[in-house]
Length: 173
Length: 328
Image 1: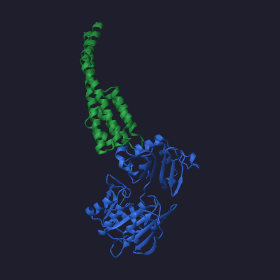
Image 2 (image 1 turned 30 degrees about the vertical axis):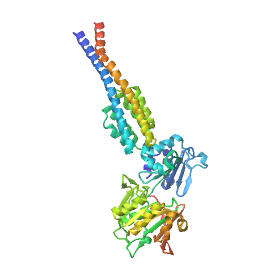
Image 3 (image 1 turned 135 degrees about the vertical axis):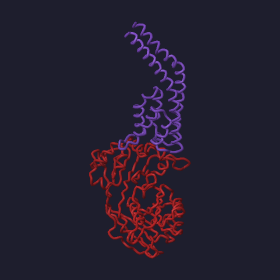
Image 4 (image 1 turned 180 degrees about the vertical axis):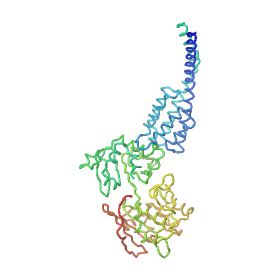
């Protein structure tokens, strides 16, 4: 009786783990796409509106899904916190370091964000636009990779979870 | 009072400024930051090079030397992390921040088509601390009143930089707008504040007290702004800071002929020097300005001299007791 219960629990855990992995895989290209769009929006804010960076970050955060929006907002809040003497680059880096693990994105996207942060706000409009476009094109490439990975491994993870759990169950019995 | 500035300073310089002795801090006029060179402060007409503990160093070499990283941080903080939205300011070489403080900048200029496009590698910062000295114009204003017309004379305020020109006209604006015993009810005042110095507007709202009947056109080029004011706001007195170009003078002339009293300031030591400048030449030659105010200072002693300009006849009157430099 107890054994059956344990086996069922194991199977359920394996199933959920598999689903979670495949969900992460399918979320990644979506988030990258959103991020690229948000950066393009930032480009417009900076290029045509000359909006101050914290406000520009907030308004481009409005279209993002929660983990990324929180990242953008926390960067903006850090920049506006008075009396700390923090630069835009430092605020951005800290926000990425604190909030990135909540997203489904991986190392290459993190690199792209950190690289963008180093030049955020410290040069004239033309230069800012160049950096933003560079980051967007970087992300577009990663989006392609992420979509490929999802196709390849998405279903695999789903079945692997259950099958792995079944294997452990068989061994234990 | 210097809080709004302290928030903008990088940590190293901030701690020095906060350690300055109270006498110096109360009279602080300028903080000058130059990359790799000693930090300089100007207070009460004197200057000093403070060391890391905030005490004036005996020789400049012992003073605190701000580094490259600090200058970059300062520029980032001054521009609210958005250098791109301050391109116009960088072209003109200064940024005005909340509180009316103006930060002058120097570095390497980037040219485009022979004109300055942007400043890069900004390595010199001059933080000028603005103070509102309420009442500093109270003794000057009676000398500027045209009692017959119940109005203010066309007035030109002349002085070299750092003598309190802007502080004086800021108070004159407040007094004229509020009204005094000699000028009951006040007058409608229009201020064209191209450099955001007189009113120190933040999002269009003046941070200095300019009285209840004052309209401010913030950040607008003077020549265009004066015409806009005349057409739209029907001011009785128009105030502009630092007229320098021929177009400015042209607009002042227009305003005067539109029946509006004008108070303007210009850089210059005296009448002879100013009438050599093409922009002011015509205005002065035609004798349109009927009052001339000259400012001078020695250390902390400010002196104001009001002269009557009526045609070629010059009569001198000295403002009693001048103004006192005091923070508030």
